[in-house]
Image (tube, rainbow, N blue to C red; front, side):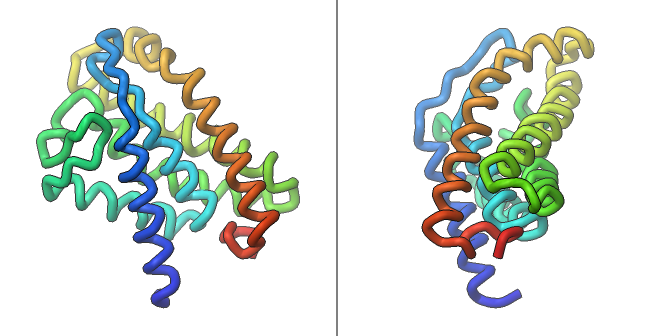
Length: 184
């Protein structure tokens, strides 16, 4: 891995951290899992860096959180966050970024906006929710139906984040084509 890739990985990890500064909204219906902007950063990591480097950016971010840095929305950090109701969503960040990047690379013949939207929905929402729902069931003892219904409240916001990701990807590609790994 060259130094340029390392810098890009660190930069996207920092973007995810900065998105944690935006206020979160805790939802009691979802077992206390908050609405945050950080999934936007996860989607961007996969689209901008590609599957492998996108997942590494998210792993770097989660490692820093595990060490105690209060980088999650609401100023949370430390190992304790991996034992709460949002653990599935946090762990799901890594495969979500990977799948987002893989889908983006796979649909490279589509226009950037469409490819990024499909990738963000497929990886950043579907994969993220698979892990999030499993974690919610495990940590809160909800059954599958209740965990799915509790997670459904996040869908409108995540669809908006997927749209925002597609707009950012399109704008980035137009101004600097090498910004999107699968298009370089």
